[in-house]
Length: 442
Ligand SMILES: CC(=O)SCCNC(=O)CCNC(=O)[C@H](O)C(C)(C)COP(=O)(O)OP(=O)(O)OC[C@H]1O[C@@H](n2cnc3c(N)ncnc32)[C@H](O)[C@@H]1OP(=O)(O)O
Image (cartoon, rainbow, N blue to C red; front, side, top):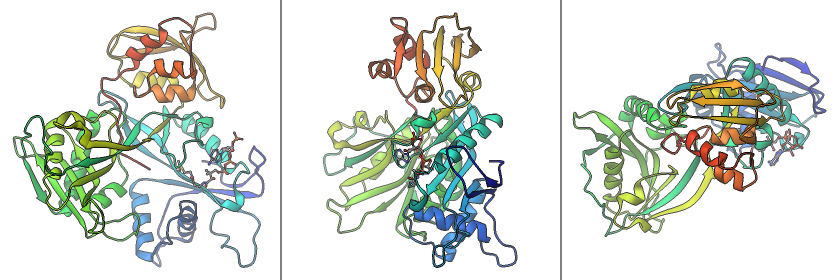
């Protein structure tokens, strides 16, 4: 956001000062500078985190710098004696850029939004709306085809044009005696020190990312968690973390899992996965076979399993995989329809005319998509060109990675099918051949 200083924003927000800055350290003390400290004091209130120790805060700021995060803080102009310091913002917002696989391994820079908090004493006065609408307009002006976020609550972001584009499944796998795979996996798995993952995991993840529509570069926290350097609940290192690697036929690592034992009080004894990334199906099957073979445990839990995980099909008894919950994961907000749709592959040839409504006036209009079975050309259509489908910009975000089905969105009344059969046609055109999956939260 370029608007530093006193701002009289729209939506009735007054008497607040908005500042944009990068997280930084004070060179003279070696500690995070005052603005950065205030910022994180505020996000910890918003997300109910415990207050950070000096070391935990230092690590957090280092990770924020490594991710290239851009911070916005909102300060109240009014101060009360004994109340929180004036340098602790009443609202926070941040964005950073990461590459996103928009299908077929095509990587596009996405505008990722995070750390949105408003202090309870300042909520529902339009601060979020002000921060979000300003940021989205600037992201569009900066040329980002889309913005993305993961949400704490499902009811907040569709009003700003975000649609759910990927889902995360939390699963429990019964690994008690009798666990058996239909085909024996190769079992080229060996345990390693979690610290070995520091070099290997980012390489493995970046290969995996090219195979999975919707996958995006991860923030620094993931590698800190996988290596046991960080427990995000405590902010400290986690000495309970264990890890294993899968090797391909040439002996190159092409998958890893990082996990911990949940403690002897847990019944049944449980292995909790911290991170699980497999580039190939062989690595995926073998790592699950390894996890099921860990003695003194009969259950494995994983909070970030894919929508179309092959795991139930790998087992002779698919009931051993139980989905405990399914939640929206990545939300996409299309900012530039032409740029976003032309960036992704289109595997089915054909033409589709979409009428897109955008209440924020960033990306609405009528567009013709013409696919040759590889790429599409997207052009603005005249008002006299009949639209096959009419939909909101949030629904287009949901379709973007091929995760939501236009037929189901039409059944839910979220897409108007103006031409009979157009939703089925759109369903095949938007399909990317594999359900989107992004094991990320940010
Ligand atoms: C990407 C992320 O970082 S997700 C993290 C979101 N943050 C959190 O969950 C932390 C705790 N919650 C908060 O800090 C705040 O309540 C926020 C950020 C969710 C909302 O901030 P506010 O400044 O109160 O929102 P604001 O007043 O701008 O409201 C904007 C609109 O969103 C709606 N809204 C705000 N919060 C919610 C909510 N939790 N659920 C549903 N609607 C909401 C408002 O009703 C308003 O609707 P309208 O404009 O259509 O009438």
